[in-house]
Amino acid sequence: MSFQQGLSGLNAAAKNLDVIGNNVANSGTVGFKQSQAQFADVYANSLSGAGGANVGIGTKVAQVSQQFTQGNITATNNPLDMAINGGGFFRMDNNGEVTYQRNGQFQLDRMGFIVNPTGAKLTGYTADASGVLSTGSPAPLSINTADLAPQITSEVEAVLNLDSGEAVPATTPFNISDPTSFNRSTPVSVFDSLGNAQTLQMFYVKTTNPGEWDVYAASDGAQIGAGAVATLNFNTSGILTTTPMPLGPIDVPATASGATPTFPVTLDFTGTTQFGSAFSINTLNQDGYTSGRLASFDIDADGMMLGRYTNGQSAVLGQVVLANFANPNGLQQLGNNMWAETSTSGAPLVGVPNSGSLGVLQSSAVEDSNVDLTAELVNLITAQRVYQANAQTIKAQDAVMQTLVNLR
Image 1 (tube, rainbow, N blue to C red):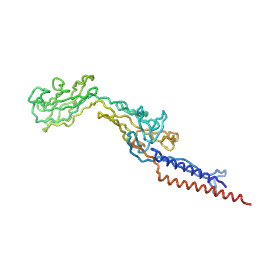
Image 2 (image 1 turned 180 degrees about the horizontal axis):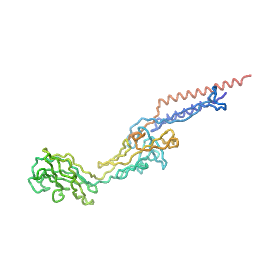
Image 3 (image 1 turned 45 degrees about the vertical axis):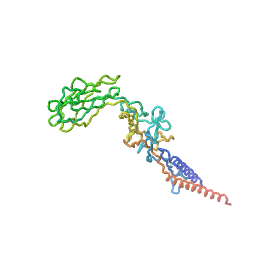
């Protein structure tokens, strides 16, 4: 006669109640993964081998297994919050120790690093000043709030239609101050080496030669050069035949002090036509910009961190990486929603989101706990009944024992 079965059942049921209670307690914890107590029966070893009449001696907890199923995704107002939709973990640097988590609640520390509530730094691929990613070993990610350096204008792209029906200007030679000496003009803002804006104006003058137009230029009202800076030629179908493109460059004088005195600008008129329709500007672009301050940033599904600046430009600030494991249940739980790699989990498979077995990222969102509170409350009732039933087996064994003791 043994009380072992009942005692083992009580211990297993108590462990199950602990697991369920932990799940319920963390039903509101972001990124939490619920656990499940898994049991196994227990039999005594026999020297003579197994027999058909062996009676088990109870049960034991074989494993407390975490369930890495997807939790619901909830939107937040923090652009640094991230939710993983799919497999993988955030890779964290905790003072040199690499840990992993699903909780995507992040913020900036005083040094600009992206950290979790315990101060561990989010890692990924960092970007240099030009936005080029360093895709070697992942490193702590930070938001660089320095101003974006200006870019000097090096090319102006203009796609126009010059009206073939226009007459040759009545006044010659070209005079920037006399509108009767040119047919049309197009102004565009260009930027010097310090990011100062100035107006580059191009004037189009139809010549007496069929299909030929001279292009003059001025910077902030001062003519560049003594004559035309370019000549455009069109065939009888109105198609531009001037080659090669782009033309120039022309040396544009900087009008602001402190900048490089002149800067070369090429003129690209590819696609410009001379049809029998009104003058039109289809494209007028240039490749320079002034300096800008970081206004906002966002993180796309591939983990790319893109900063947006007050000058209308954008730049890559870095890229978040994720890690996955062949056996996530082999990870060691560290608390604070963190796990550590073990020999059982296997080596981490590190990569960018939305690649391989790694999920996609959703910014300004977090992944809720995957605990089904309704199911856990039902499990709680079941575990309570199991505990009570095992207590009854001990009670029955005690009654039988008392009966034996009372025999005369």
